Every structure is written in structure tokens, then in C-alpha cells.
Length: 108
Image 1: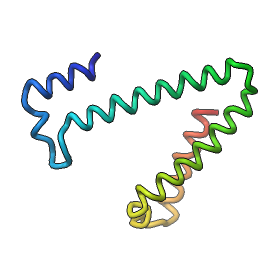
Image 2 (image 1 turned 90 degrees about the vertical axis):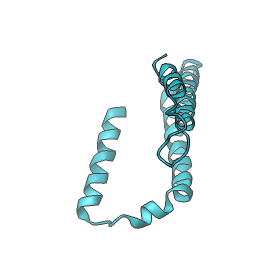
Image 3 (image 1 turned 45 degrees about the vertical axis):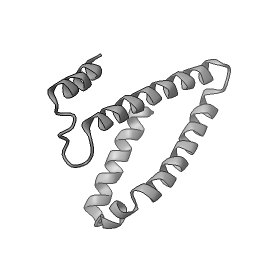
């Protein structure tokens, strides 16, 4: 409801057309709504898969495996220049490792 009111407010005030040069703001709002919807659908299918008699470890293992592979392929195509621009030193690598460790323990 809140996001729909934000989009409506943007359209009514005329700020939707005055975006920051990256495109119209309604497009960003659309991507947020689409992403949230797809994330919700993903969670529902995960729950259905786990409740349907599939072993939990197998389902979560496959989710992690294929999620990692798909993310790697997407990042290699879409973020290649950004990865090449990173100065990989010990500080950057340790911050990346720390972030990944936090994610691991959050989902563990």
C-alpha cells in the first residue's frame, strides 16, 4: 500500500518525469514492485517444496547450488566492468569475506 501511494504521489506531483537522468522514476518503482512480487513468489514455492515431502537438506542444497551458479553467470555479464575496477587488496578481500560470513550465519 505504501509503495502504491508513493508511486501515486510521484505521478500527481509531476516528479515522475523529473528523474535524475537515469530514466523515469516510475520505472524504478515498477522494478521494486516486480522484484518484491517475484521474491514473494519464490518464498511461497520454497515453502511448498519443503512441505511437499522433499528432504529439507536436499532442497536447500540445490537452492544454494543453482542460486550460486545463476548469480555467477548474471554477475559475470552484467557487472564485469565493476568487478574489474575493484582494487583487490587484503582489506577489500577481508571485508568481502566478512560480509559473506555474516550472510552465511544469518541463513544458517
